[in-house]
Length: 575
Image (cartoon, rainbow, N blue to C red; front, top):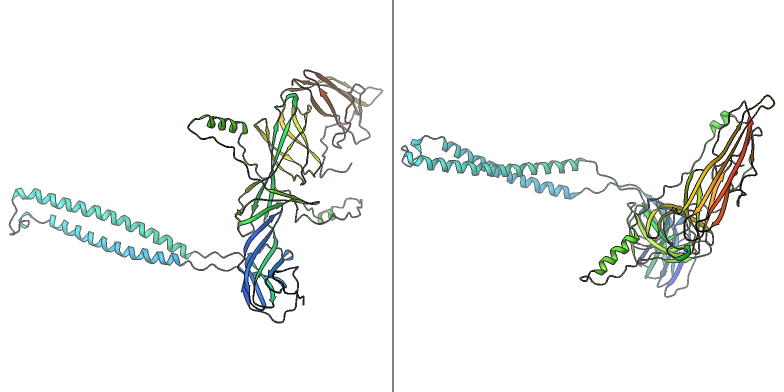
């Protein structure tokens, strides 16, 4: 047994220690509450706190009704007490699903409605009797209408008719009202009876956590139970605001990072201290082993016995709508110009406190946060940084002659930029949405900011020559030449990058030659893609740059050729 010397507030932290206690103590239900949650991209670490009066000796604390998705191996218990406090075994047990208790409110409501229905029925019978009596009176002869039993005078008949008609009309209206009330009450009773007949839903299976403690004397104790659970996570969202209003084409970029938190763990997080971490808790702990690879002939029956495992990436979260900042500024200025309104101050957005280490970063959201377990999204601003990007107009005119403005930034924060959706704003206008790739601290990444209409790109065919086979040659030849023009209409110089291609051949019978007329590329292979080359220039205002691309293809005349796209990136065949 592990023993700790008594001290005013002895803190103990053990990893599910199995200890032999003198005797099993009585079970006490641990009425804990969730105090803190750390959300990872693919899981969450939940910390429950408990303050309790512990008796002397051994006690078994039971944390009841925790979510079934808890990872038992992740359970950790920390504690402190006013005397010696020993934490022993920590174990879990599954609590089966239980039928929910009968809803007595339905029975009480039914009893009340049935009593009301009896009263309504009595009213109906009285009104119907009253109406029947008036009907019989109206059917009597004139001789019975006078008190002496003699026929009434003709002058009294009109008054008698009016009295009978008014009485019947009043009785009929009262009956209509009471009958409608009876129908409504009957429908409500039928609805409750049908609801009572339905099978009661069962509560989902849960997990109980049992913690054994031993105290040398009666004392106050404080315990914290921490566990990891799936069904929760966060995704990064970014706002990239580019300002190009400075003279000379200088640009400033503000990159705002947000965390989109959602959870379906089975328990609500109410009033918790919330933080998000860049650690991917469920991705793995080490690199996979590389096994020996053998090249063999294809065997159909062997392939049929094998299986393919495919892991699909989660769909990106829809990017939240963003209000046009320029329109917001104009609206604010209009409001401030009204003399009847007080001076308005721009609201500041709450931001998390960052804590970065050598291998991970976390962001603590200020205040106490509520995150329900219904899968709803909660978005928090966690950081913002101002950058001086390098601007570049990039184009691939073989596919699209539009030049797109691109900003290259360096991640100057201590935390990595996780892959996520970025909302693009350029000079106060919303351009669209894009993606940010994983970017480690100190690394660079590119963000596109839409079309640059002041950089004109054109690609036109200059020559296409085909030579058919002759009696001296069985080879077919085709020569192609293109001219690419780049013109800068900005009042300042801008860097422009053009990407184009010539086909490649993996068959010795097909020969492709790059001709001497081709303008020498500044980048012979772009992004490790064979046949893809690039030209990058600083283009002065109103300057035009021309690029020539020329190549020749040869293949046997008795064969047909076709252009095919070669896959690149993950999943591509090795070259």
